[in-house]
Length: 415
Length: 145
Image: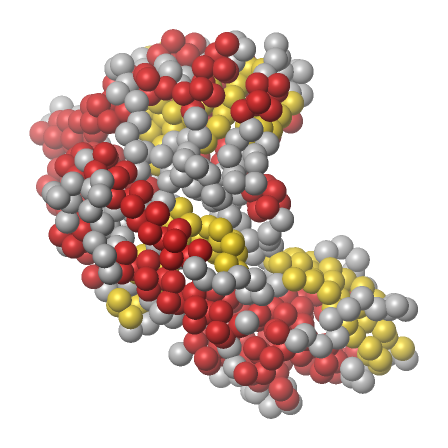
């Protein structure tokens, strides 16, 4: 296979990078593992695994309260992650970053706290036709409770947002625009800067679901001018159960707490409780301390490789993969946006995705099959499900060749 | 390997499903749904004097669920309601227990390989869940959950 050279700098050595991921070194059903399910969750580099191990072996204590050495160490390590996220997203201050369980919890926090305070009967919330269920259902629940209306930006056959239709949806009752940065099912990269700007012009607040964006491209929340931006740590090569909600301080300060408990208070009496400052106001209870520290290690790791490098390499993989799959007769790619992340979602004539998934699995190839928690996207394209190969910077062209060969075998079996 | 799952009969019935059409004059109908993969199935039965005279199905699904529905409708014809329920229980046992008694299943034993693919058991049982509700006269769609 020809090597990828054009935009990837000489410094990027995928074989060396793969050494950092212990999980990739195994065989599955007797074949070398080909892990192509990165949009579901990414694998973890040794640096992350070791950071978690070190916490439990050396520093384990609760944070923010103890005066003893271990508590101070774990508090420092946990809060260091917040500083790393601040730099990673280019937030103004650390106080604008709230640790959550994942993007899903981040969106629910906004829907429940901001939404229940600010949304009134007859107000409108705009989402898009390519949202993950996690950016649909919290708003639906809010609309139901408040008598508000959910409006949906349609997409074209390539899986791109119809921006003219979006502009038509914006009106005096629009309070919130909640759109994904990158589609998990289609790979589409949305023009979020423009989406936010138009939302602001209409007097609405904008939330961006960044779960599929942050592992693959540089994100600058100030440049985007997003009011809220949520992502999951586990898709960023960090531990599961970690994530961050960025929110502009002005908005966060005006919002009521999401959950009550320890750490989110300043004083408690039975008559009255006063709340803690940002970001702790939104962080009730003992958090996922080890996970948070692991997330910090993941961000360090990604920074070491460099997101520009990652984006360039993954783009070449996407181009290579698109070509390799397009050569297979009867295969149709779902999601062919001009601006796309390294997601290859497809259907094959006469073969159900679950059969594809099972046959590939026996060849050691892990892909996702189903509706990808985006049933409205499946309906839009008139398919019950797709097969999805989602790539990360540790994937190789040889792995894409293995996928293509596997799919030819599938075709032989079922066609 | 994977051929244990996709045995020749299964592939044959998935590519050319038998009894795959709506039925005029059906007196039992039920709808099955697998929320995991979105597969839907409509089952039609003609039951007279306690005997399944005819069986057919419609729907789109994976090879396993299509072949299962196809082979099920074939094996139901001429069976009494009680025999059909018995077959259903035996089929379920074939897929979910370690030491199933495979006798009396006829061609349906080809599904024994599904046991080794836990994620696919629901594909094979969708038609049979639907059969149970059709025989019991339940109108609401059944799901595999």
